[in-house]
Length: 211
Image 1 (cartoon, rainbow, N blue to C red):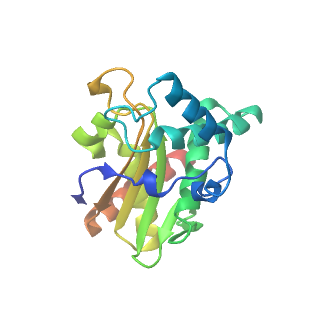
Image 2 (tube, rainbow, N blue to C red):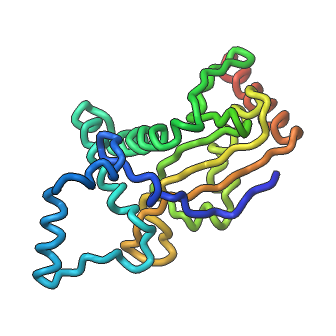
């Protein structure tokens, strides 16, 4: 398996409101937040980015949280609501290159988050409270279930590459409390042997469940 280093997902180029509208659409109108920003400047409040934060990530997290609240009002748990809101955001910003698929192989149904048909690569959108440090140190073992999932999709689809785009809500815990959220991406390319062995294990689990 070939695994790329983690890198920032360019949130600053993919800003969306809670309604999934591009922020650029507000430029021709005066918005209340613009006025409040100027009021803060006049009072001498700190208005710049927090040192070490990913550019515009906290703003985007605020919009994602607005969507999550709607799901929670509908009865969804906090973690499920935030994960769904992030997936909704990612499907909007990646709609130009990715489509959702419904797969079935050996009687097992699968629904990948996104498939980049042009490049023949899967995309997976995740949201986690686990530290980014765990992914940097040992991604395959600390997030093994994600690998089982994406290897299965890849095997069923006949491709070998997946890119994870992950919202690490707590950032990197090793840098202390209050670390800002980070949206990061990482790409894995699997060998045919890895894909076959992974699917063998999935089928073995299926057989065990049917006993």
